[in-house]
Image (cartoon, rainbow, N blue to C red):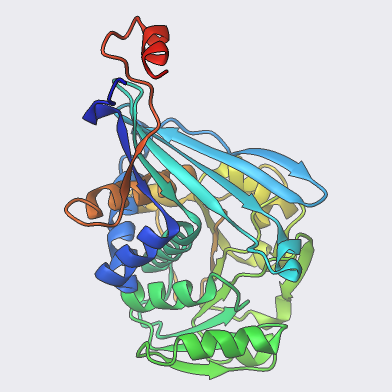
Length: 347
């Protein structure tokens, strides 16, 4: 039987591997590393192939592919969004991803991305706030206390030095879960009974709800001047969280306009409504927060370059660890013209 050569083996990071890797590195350090990689890649934005993610919508949810390449490496993520899953004891979002070498076309990493997406979403939120939030922001309202919430809170602690989170969810059990998970985080955690209570004294407001509908988590009269809004729950057509009038009062920043206009909060606005691309702020080509009374809004839907950066971090982090296994998933005969002969020899 022909033995696979070493070059045909692909490192695979399972959910168990990812959890062990995160424990070894630490959640906040992992978010910090991913944030640094995302910022590096956003600052070379023009080197990447870019396209809105490719969706397959159904009455049950959405399944999407998110591809990109910088000419040397290629990456994609498979991800679903099924809000009804929670009521069935399933995750709303699951994902896996792949990195490949452009020169050979061979995959070089296959990884779970359900946990990794939560980490990179927190990293992206923190990066945006670094450029857009008030400089003295120390209090964040976390509205929506589901699977992403703890990662968001720890990401803001690591990257923006917040010290207090005010939690609210329509389900009190979700708030209790989040508060318990953050009990030893070093954050002051305040559980609230309404979104109005949660945003009291908060300079940063993060909304992260899952219902696939045009919701109004924040009404116009709830949002005063000088705050930064991190809206991450609206991420597909027909799914929003903010009242339209809030958008009209805000300076809006996005990842990739062609995708955000379809999936983000700005789907509520005219197609030519002015927005600023965050990569331009990072490179100094555009201004971020410019006024203490300004309302800044990061209309986050997630973009492939962020996942690409997160996969790069994982690929580097697993070297010398036991947090992966090699998969024999590529046919690699000794003679590349004799695939049939390799199959015959396996008999």
